[in-house]
Image (cartoon, rainbow, N blue to C red; front, side, top):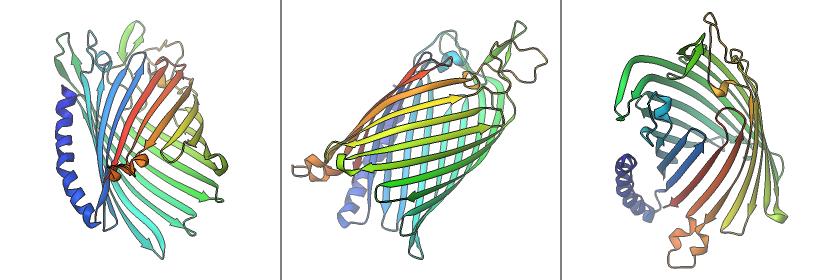
Length: 375
């Protein structure tokens, strides 16, 4: 019922906007799309249902406006928040994102400037993120560069639930701030090969631990304590090769990560895209992830009273994971000669991934289903 009540206002907004967009489409002034997606995640201690819906408008002024609404309904969050028993899908997070982008021409080269604002709310957590972005294409559009600047401001609280599922908010309030910078470069090397790279730095300051997680110290459960600051660096690269004769492309990704908590991580990934005619394509994906432990993580968990930091977070341990999955995407082009030619650009997709994970979270699976409806 909570999901249905939350989605009703957004669905009504889509119903009101669609006739306006369709009317403008008749004049050729406005185009866009409606996006619907359902996400599901399952692991040893967590189940998440996360439907989302969005709309994008492309205006004749070379402006794009996009809004997306997502809701997370989580099963295990009630236990993590101190409930005496688990009650399915009682922890709900609302997430709204809005993006605007303006495309311009600089000396014959296309460029774009944009901003993204994202607001997330749940009973014990509020998050506000703002991103400023710019990109440009040069060298007859064979080279593309991009920059982004990110800002984050979060507020962390505590909400406990009893057996009757009644929430009680405690006198606990912490903040987490962050700023980040990223840059990307993409180069077309030939008609069938392209390469790209990305660098990002993120600096966090404030409360970085979990508000509920406890660590047993000398027989006494004490609140988890992490350093109050964190500096993250990541470098990523991508090589894409197209094989026209077999309608297949191969994408090789690599990401390296390090931070001042002494965590080092490497993430190679391989994707294969194969066209199944004009109406469908298949994507297969394999991803490997391996990281070292944070400097304050103890494998034994035997912390002492005078230890400045303590953690029970599985993500602070050394672990590795394998992700295997695929996605099938089907386009509506087979309807072009039928009774509904406007549905020729419609598409929907179905994806499945399984994660083999060696940390305490255990193995997990992700399923997704989405629909893209242009107008």
